[in-house]
Image (cartoon, rainbow, N blue to C red; front, side, top):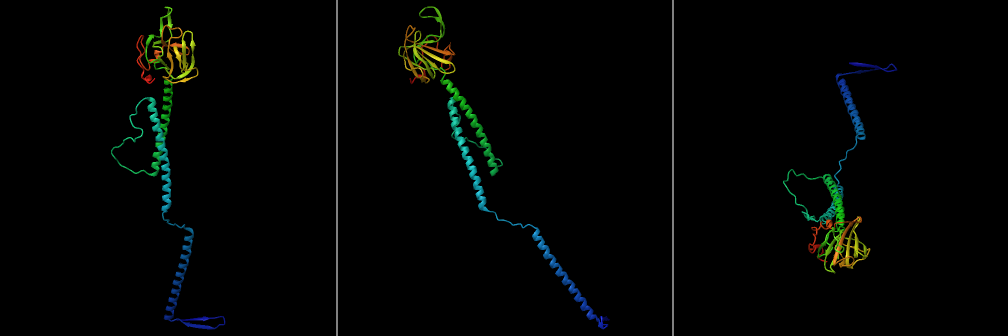
Length: 317
C-alpha cells in the first residue's frame, strides 16, 4: 500500500505502508493514548485530594488528660466536704436544741442525741451513687435539717415563754411551816365578831418563820400599813400581784427584783392581828382571788386548820 503526499511546491512524497509499519503505528498510537489517560488520571486525583483536604475538617483524637480529671474530681470532693461540714454543724445545733427543749419540757428523751441511731435491713439491688446523686441527697438532707431546726426553734421559744410565765406565777407555798388558820372567803371577823369577807389566806406560824416569794417578781411595796402591818407587794406582770402582810421584819425594799422561793420577810403580828401569822393574798387587776387557785397547781389546796408540810422546793431555804 502506497500513500503519495504533495506539498505546496508540487513536490510529491510517496510512502509505502507495509503491514509492519501499520502495526508499529497502531502500537505507538495505543501507547500514546494509554499514557495520556494515566497522566490525566494522576492530575485529577491530585486536584481531588487537595480539594478534600481543604474542605474536610481534620479530626484529632486527643489522649485523656488525667491530671485535669483528677483536679476536677478533687474540686468536687472539696465542695462535698464543705457541705458535709455545714451539715455537721447543723446537727450539733439540733443536738443542743433537742437537749434544751427536753429540759424545758421536763422530759427525758427516749434516745441519745449524740449517738447515731441504729439502722439496718436486707440489702436489695445495691447501686453506687453518682456525684450528682450525692449532691441531690445532700440538698434533700439540708432542707430537712433546716425545717427541723426552724421547728425546734419555735418550740424552744414557746417553752421558754411558758417556763418564764411559770416562774412568775405564785405556785409555791409562801411559808415552810405552820397551818391554815383562816381561808379565803366569808368568815366571822376575829376582832369584831361580825361577818366579813377575807381576801387571802392566814398561815399561822411562829414569829420569825421565813416568808418566801411564791413567784419571781419586782417589789412594788415594802412598807408599814395600819391594817396589814409590815407588808410586801410583789408584781409578777400581767396585772398579777401577791401580798405578804403582818411581818415582823422585811428583808427587801421597793424596786428589788426577787426570784421564786427567795426569803423576803419574817412572820410577825404587826398591824390588825391577833397573833403571829402570814396573811397571803393574790390580786389580779386589783381584785382579790383565792390563792388556792394558784397554789393548787403545785400541791393540793390547803384546807382550813391543816398543818403545812415542808415544801421540797423550799427545803434548801
